Image 1 (cartoon, rainbow, N blue to C red):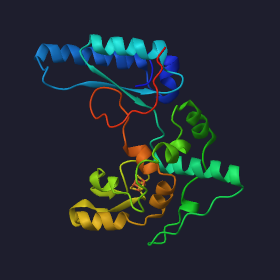
Image 2: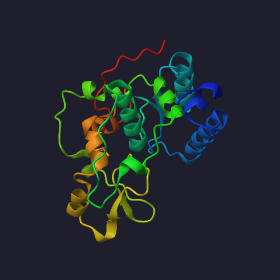
Image 3: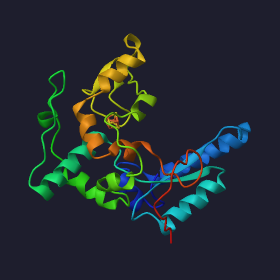
Image 4: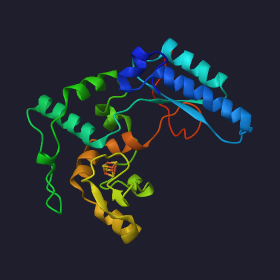
Length: 231
Ligand code: SF4
């Protein structure tokens, strides 16, 4: 979640109602107490933006902890590769006058015509981010540059219909690699290698931006580099 009030929560969770979320959190907590299920880990993950810190964050932390949940923090990021790459290419073209075209895929896939242009709403929502994806290259400069994305081989995103997605952070169903039950891990990895979207993603070093978490407490804390100001 990303706010205590509807006004702030609704900025990132379009169509969501924070009072419903709070009510459900309370019901779940009560069910946990009734069933004596303290052995089940339940965490509340709060995405931080430039405009939802301070009271918004502190009130939600207080509420979540009062219900017995572990409160976890991570910086909001634009985790949708297609939109993020398109947005970065748009910004690069604006800065430099042009951007190189996507390479054509082995199967003839042409992302130059397949993806819609970056949407103004998306570009605007990026302004809320403390950690803009344009900073990824500098932020992760101490991590080795790799011509292939090894991290994506660790996660295998299988869609409801059994097809393997290019990676966990893509949504477009045209970006699938084949049927999970008919492929070996080696074949899945080979199908991902050299994909034109991966090449752009790696060029901007978004593979790290998407995959390395920066929780500040709770589980899965790999790194924390940005100062958190909640007051
Ligand atoms: S390079 Fe980017 S798009 Fe390709 S698998 Fe890795 S994170 Fe996903």
